[in-house]
Length: 186
Image (cartoon, rainbow, N blue to C red; front, side, top):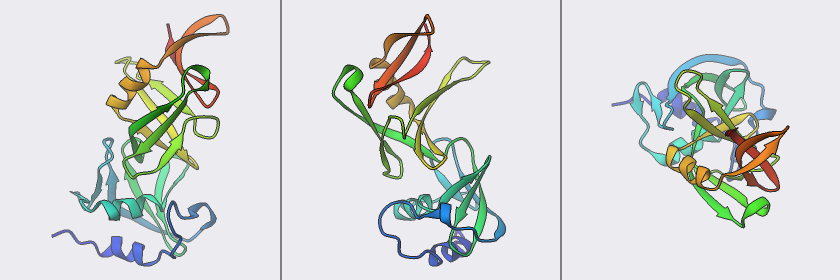
């Protein structure tokens, strides 16, 4: 049986903020130490080494996550605890495409049911591993939190890619909300 005491203590401190993320950027409680909570690269949340199987609990925790520098925290009005995040705290598991060409809009849904449209406020970025040359694509979700784009969604994204010259060089990329997001040089 997993001890959910500390996790439940955190949840009990949350004011009723309605749907969506809590205003964690406004809360500055004292740091209370690290807890044994980890978000794996595939988006699975673990507490004390055991996956958290209750989606509503994961969803609730996802509304109080904050990143300060390279560190991640769960934050309530009275407590701030450190957690481990293997890559990004969220995974973009679905993509909806509206329109086409420069007018197309790409809408991403995360594993915790947050939805964003890629564009100036929610940019896409692509990191290429220098050893394997494998790309890691991300979409900005909120504040300074990103979602790793799931491999199957990335394949859909690549199918939409077009070539555009940037500084005289051909780049492969995608359009969303009037902005071109380069994936890589051709």
